[in-house]
Image 1 (cartoon, rainbow, N blue to C red):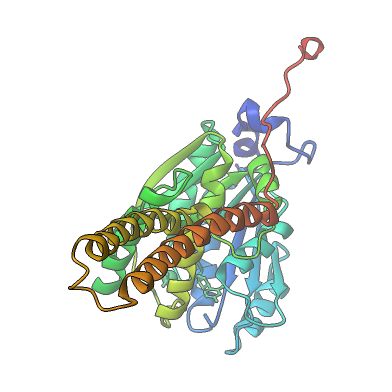
Image 2: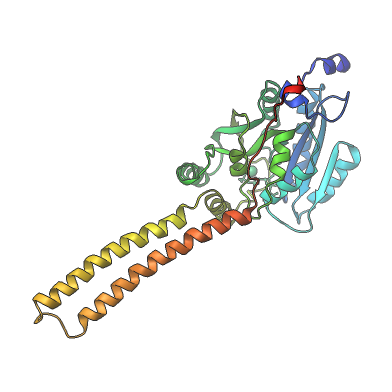
Length: 336
Ligand code: UDP
Ligand code: MG
């Protein structure tokens, strides 16, 4: 049964050229960041294994990244690895954060398709099969987009607003209501590995890469056990990383404020000088000079900050060392 099914699966042409394991069924890698999930990780794994078992036409590998858990998650993961050769565990020396954990998982994943998902069952394993289907029908990157989410009203409201603000100021088109639950084909995963910046906002990097991107809608479940590992502090850092990694709007704002300040300063200067020339009896001695100097310097300083800011922005883009471009294919005459 399994064998006949295995023969049926066909990877779309654009993925085939990258398939490296001759003759073997396509390999699907799961990248699974874990931080203090001892209460639910076993259940998560069981559910993932059950779900993937319904699609025996693929091979699977489960790359867990233990992000410095302090609660014995590692023991559970070691145990899973002992009982299932498809499980691999990348064990961090300390907590490096969700985005770095995903990065490490991607670095270790070898699949023809790589699926990144949370390990608290908020990203339901069954949805990953839909991602696979979309990939089989030709998509290169498939993002799971939340139709609904069952989080606290505060989290829902902040996330909702944030994604829309980000979309307005970011230089790339970052899809709204999409986290890191997505599938990347081998090529896209390889290209993503080339992004080595330290402040990481992976969903933005993925959006900036191009490729044929599709979405699958899903309803986000409640966290099955434990509590969110994204306290307000971490959430704000991620939010700031999102804005600063993909937009220089804050820097441009300084320049704009600079121009406005200088404009207002000019008006103030004209006012002060007029007062001094035509109504000398009103002004206190020395006032005009002080006003002129203060307003002029204030405006000039603001503008200079903006100029410096625009250079800082450029330096920032340079040090990010992102790939200059991503080639999908080079087409030449003699290949077909
Ligand atoms: N996570 C991680 N390192 C961290 C925080 C979270 O690897 O520092 C993992 C966590 O185990 C989970 C995923 O990232 O699998 C998402 O975290 P969480 O569910 O706490 O975030 P939320 O769903 O509340 O946004
Ligand atoms: Mg969660």
